[in-house]
Image (cartoon, rainbow, N blue to C red; front, side, top):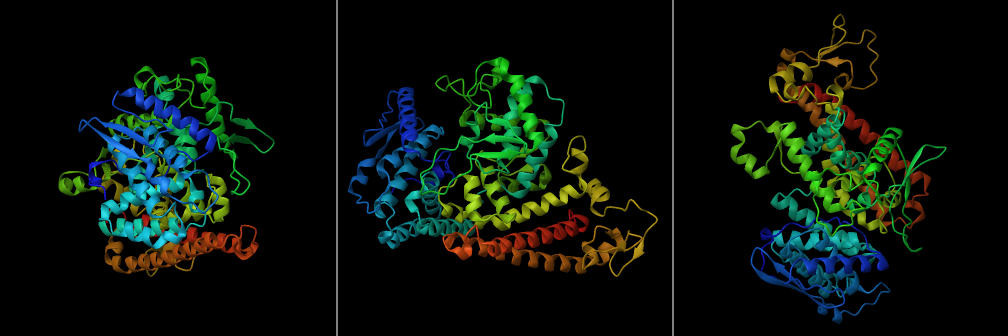
Length: 564
């Protein structure tokens, strides 16, 4: 057992920045390790050697990774050399710029699990799960994160998803028990979304435009299409083409073997987004040759974020992370007045702050890939279709997204509430919107535009002179309103209706989750395949019912519950 506390190092995400491709990954890993070894005389990491030495700047000592433990593994399956794959994965952690203790601890966690499981052989499943479950809660999460990150990098190591499903279950239960949130809260996401949408409506300076266009494109593209951050950064300069159907964007997806799910490498994108890309290309061509869509050379001098060893003709994920942090600091916080404050700190000082101006966690580059997967699920896409769109070569990579479906529903409810009256535009109205009294008076009870129509109902009143109600309960109708006085009087009854609708929504969520579980486990079965019309119809119909229930729930909450 490693004698290191998980609190002492950065938490590894479960999403790998890249996926494995034998020839490309080995070549890229050797470059990464050579550059890393040259950074410090005490670093010694050679791809073909089994002992790597990483110098720890903070503790002034060396941390070692020993890959020779994998020599004892006797693989019974026909997969690529596992030691080589693990080394390539370890190199991606180095490339992310993680500190040496984070790299060494996570690689050693993986090596321990790989050894116990004999290369993730199902014959050693029980022993492996027992080892993980016997760790302390926070160490257990760290071990799960390391293994799941590796599975995301090389999913063929667990082709049937046996380890993936169980380890995600362990991770989810442990996080729930100790109160850890893997992805940002819906409030944090929506605040960032509104800032991005409003900021890019402004007449930006040339410097701000060149610096932050990658944020605009990343947010608008990867929240819809599940791209790894490395894939986003590697989109080529000439990837946009126009055809009879519209504009297509070619994605930098690696060629797949025939036995894998064939991923999609070209997608139709909205015309507005395509025109924004064309405008960016035209305005940044003058800064020099760029192999990637985002021009590194066009970044302003004060955004020279990454060192000289990075190819200046291409954009890189570390540059993207630096610009995202800059955007939070200078735009989200300085321009729009938000504060980044962890939940624990908020609780300690919440009496003296306005919670509406607090962001508990920044969105990380790979978070949007998660958002996109969840969004595709709620739209009723079959898991095989989602795998193709997301570049997953294994359908079992989707197991963990179901754990967060309830969260995503909460996020969609909030977004609908904002769309009804705020139109997601916080511009000059920012202070008004986040002012409790002003917000309630202007938006919550939402006075009718038709002040002459006020037809009394058992609860509230109708503003439609024809009373053409298309729902079973009038409180869910667009034309329904309620006065503040009556709202206070009948708040308990209205709350009961909200609870009933929430219960219906949760049941629909469970129905959708169950359908996805069936599809993932039985996608090779004709009854559950992507080509089965009846099964796909059930997915789409359940999705529509959930969307309708969400809309009604958001409609009622928007009118009567915000800032009660």
